[in-house]
Length: 284
Ligand code: PAF
Picture 1 (tube, rainbow, N blue to C red):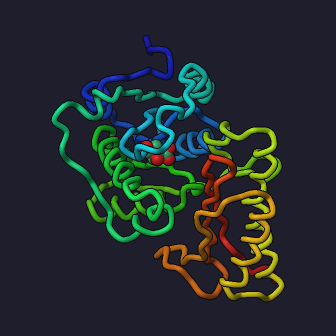
Picture 2 (spheres, protein in one colour):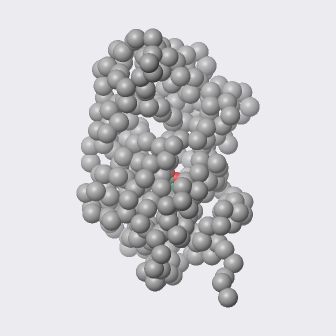
């Protein structure tokens, strides 16, 4: 008799043993829970690619710095499990801190250079926490495919770099950012926004739409486009951490926009730090 799905696994050893004994292809979606349509789109993509789908739910403490929102990070495991069972996920890996970082833990995985720019400037230890936990999860699950959202565009590139440099056999696939109907990028942190801040937060997407419009009208200087975006964000009470025009592959900053480049930004709305990005396209 088959056990009811999804099977909830808490132990590293048990998850590793199950995965080692599976003969089917595995699609893996790492999450910190409090799932929204963005996560669910990754699960659906994993189901299209692989025979078995595994989702991890783990709020990884090492990717938060002491002044960040680890203790208040939203959590609702019962709802998460319900949503994943509706999607017929096979396994949920739901470890404790003791399982993931047992006493005596001493090893870290760090990607250089591309972790020190953009989000890495204001969150200096963040990516070391992300690469370490994802390397651990990949070693436990050894998936054929790992699906990540393009909302965290820098995270996607950092993890792809790690996968390549450390010869992980997993294919790391970026999936499109999912937006609310009014354009706000879906994020678990949107929960922190007051009704007024929720309205103000639209300035992130609106500034990216403005950038695309200016580029379509012939403006290409990054400095001019960023200045226009800044004005729009500041008028809507956003506090800018960074806005950058970057090369989609190398993440290097560009002085001129070109079709296929990306604009990435991080903005505080009240106390909530939100990120967003878009790929700039040339429309004829
Ligand atoms: O994007 C996230 O939710 C996290 O950074 C990840 C990839 C699950 C690692 O903790």
